[in-house]
Length: 367
Image (cartoon, rainbow, N blue to C red; front, top):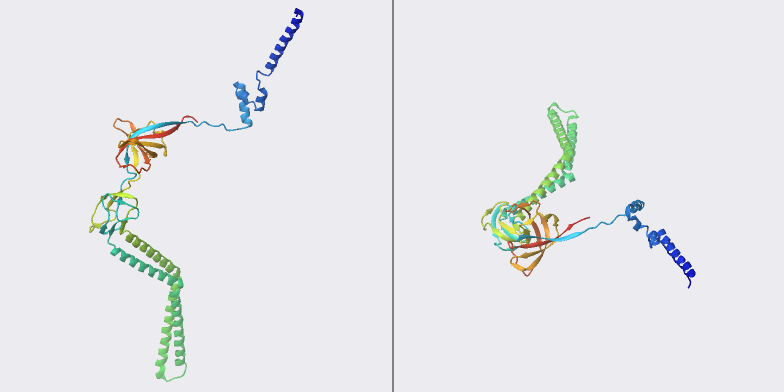
């Protein structure tokens, strides 16, 4: 092939290269420009200051919350501690004074809610209940009588009877003094006048009694209702005192103290027994430093290893953190954390056993 033929071909190849470069420049060097346009220009919005401005314009046009990142960094906080009873000892005492006639439990006995632990003589208490019931019946009867108006009705009938007596006395006087008679019969007329006057006074007294009852009816009803309420309260108190003659266990617990023997007089509120809830035991820390206490939350899982069982990890969870820290012998601030122990059937656990706890906690490291 001659050189004249090769020159046009070389020129044509150079022209094609230049045209391709111009096309790429027009597209901004982005082969996926069409795809970016379809997706709303998200890539351009994130590139450089111009992209930031476009992103702000897009956010103003179409507000959409951005997802936040919640990074949880798990860590283990360790501390020493010991097993303790879940609650402080609870005294058991009578609410009523009396002579102790039975004490049915011993130290180390386990008791259950409602179980009778001790009893006092209730003879006087039963009599008080009977008297309170009689007073209540009388108060109810009196109120019912007032509400029916029985006393008022009796006063009205007495008034009518007094009026009838007056009319009768007047009729006798008229018959006796209304005709001519010898002078020596004047005494009969005077007596008839006296009877009329007496009958008139009886009517006036009956009218006064009736009016008084009418005027005082509402006051008497209110007083009767108050007496009834007082009688009901008296009966409840007497029954409560009678119920207090038996001392019952309020919780499932173990008897740790026994103070008294049958035959002694007991006063209300004097501790007769000491009860301790023994299950489930709690693990309580003794040297947990303040560095990580802020990350611990109720419910965080934990593992307890007791000195008595070094090869066994026992499940637990954080119950609460005491709000007041304390200083240990070295001067460092430590916090007391109470953990609930999971039920363990195959190990003998006792309050006072020592060990170490590992608390699994998580803290936010950004939002």
